[in-house]
Amino acid sequence: MTGSIITKLLAGVAALVAGVAVLTGAATAGVTGLLAGTATGSTTTGSTATGSGAGGGGGLPPAAQSVAGIPANYLALYQDAAGACPGLPWTVLAAIGTIESGNGSSTAPGVHTGANSAGAQGPMQFEPATFAAYAQPVPPGGADPPSPYDPVDAIYAAARYLCAGGAAGGRDLPGAIYGYNHAGWYVTDVLTLAGRYARTQTRAPAGAAATAVGYALSQLDVPYLWGGDGNGGFDCSGLTQAAYNAAHVPLPRTAQQQYDAGPHLSPGTPLAPGDLVFYGTSTTDVTHVGIVIDSHGDMADAPHTGAVVRIETDWPDLVGANRPAP
Image 1 (cartoon, rainbow, N blue to C red):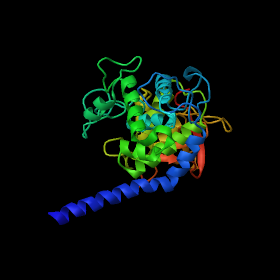
Image 2: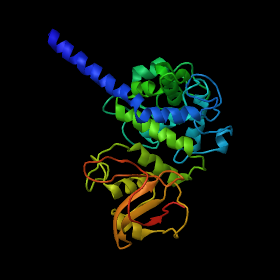
Image 3: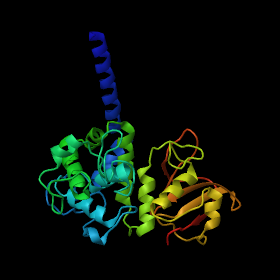
Image 4: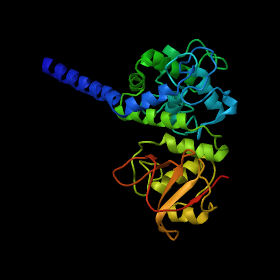
């Protein structure tokens, strides 16, 4: 019995060490970059503060700025909730909201009603007891009584939770994120995406493109599955098709068919979030597709067997790009 307990304790310690190790690797660079860009805004929900644009938002009011793939109402909530916890950039809240539910765009169980298989609810995927512990006081515009499905309540509760978990004053941002979801990969993904948001200050894609980008980003770390359309995984064109299906824009099934469907961008046209980028040996031999997520041309894709949906900064043999939702 004692040996079993000790074994479990040692396993728990090993898991914690693995999580803390993120601090000394990629996460440290991510935190440094995010905090360097933090002005007065940060993230804690619970107070009525106007976000100052921590982590790259500048001093513009939320309505005057946007970040690729984040709907304007969610962007404003992330920034407003960020003002009460100096040290927690709003971009971290936004990254969590994107990964958990595509900023509320996901139709997965538990996002809008009910719960997922782990019991999580709402756009920020709270377990009921945790949400109840951080849902008060009711934030401006929130539901009364608070609801985990209400974006205002959920985002403010997430900010309070992160702040209490170590984000206050920037003391332990990776630790706070690790507390939200106990996985080293989750910390890395959140900080990576938050860093991209901090560097991307552009008008958000309108309507369908924003929904498609948000959906694709909400699928990060879903396994690659050849022929997959979301039931157990995705292949490259299954991901892009599902992303635009979420935005009510139908696409054909394969990468070649999606390229052929157009409309094609002229060579030299700057890429925008929501554009589809195609790769292969020629325009008649398209073998891969991804969806652009920011103004730098980075894309989300499902690359190959053994991999997961992830963000790519480069892929060889670009043959063209389409803009399904102008």
